[in-house]
Length: 569
Image (cartoon, rainbow, N blue to C red):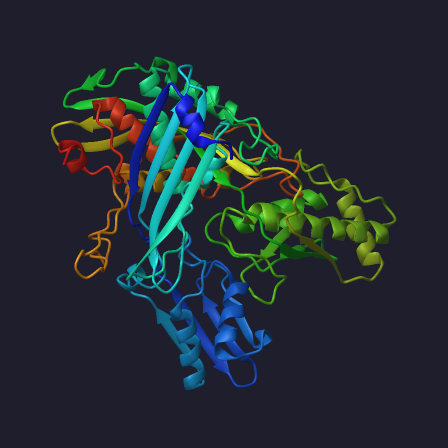
């Protein structure tokens, strides 16, 4: 949109840089595993570690020529996935074929080495970012081009420049994505896809622009704050990013930051502060659920979603209890069964918004049915405010027993609609690093993240997700890369001895703050997703802090010691 060439021509400062991110693998603690059982009468049952039971059922049924109702997929606890268990891979189909062939049960577990070759990875990117700005810091033009490798037999574009379309107010923005087919396996989404690699490049470039203009990095971002989506013109469904900048800066103590690099030293180490914007597109999928209650007041929530460690059981039960006005301890939740009401993959930070909206709809339907039996008036709570257990609940349950109804169910479906808004999650990340200039070693000493993600249904699980994402970002910034043999085209490392991940000693004190917010357009509960948001912006904040510490700008991840010891190599 706009005329980028004209904007660059009119700019007082034009900055053009290239950035690289590395091939990375998911490396869930539990490798992918499938147990398949064939019964000539009942069909096929798969006990699978998957992020989408409905997807596995559809693909396996098609591959084996079976009616979908003859395939049942169970995954009540997925374990770590991070995107690697979001698609259907050969091992799942092979296990099903083998079970049918032997007429019984087969278990197939990928080895750690097979985890590097058998269910995708995040592809390396080469990104070119060009910024044109006036002397006051106002952006006049942005160009962001990205290319990533993909397989020859299937395309996967890592849409690294998509965040650039939304991040800042600018009259001219151009983004392009290309793929380079090579002899490799097909990549796949990995926490956080697209914006994870892309915001490293954009936010590094913004920091470089701040240096060129002698502006504070936070001030530069505030001067280019987008009140509406710059490429579509749509209003944001809800956005409190300005509060994130100010809150994060206050907690971190940003105003004490000396503007010049190499200003603080402790022994052999230089201390640097950096920050970056976090931004994720908000995904949403159709979902359905049912909520039932019996004469004892026990409530059951059922939906074909999955628990991937994000607290789905807890949050969905909480939503049902809040809607019904019943004590949370009376609610149990069933997940991970393809025979339950269908919902989408547990991916894209979409579950709370999508499945939570369906659960609330189902609970409200149940409340109406209970009210009809008891003769009272259904009054679902305002989801923008918490609700304590309702005295009417006990009365309605007594009426249920008096009516002779053993169990009553409410049903709910929810689908995303085009409501004319632009829906994203936002945040501001601040990092302090210590860099040993003699050894080229970087340590993250502390981090602060402030986030705008709509209503936070459960602060404890949401905070845990953000912390996990920020740790993920430390890995992206400093440690993780899957080296490729230039001659054979194979990944060199096939285990965790050759692939570095953050451990406890790498993770500093992390402070997380959610700004007060309710999103009226995001669904029926006012919430957006946080599972991947925490991983975005961390690498850029750390890279910017490294530059502030020692004056060396690293434009390639990870920030390995050799890139600091030999910056011109």
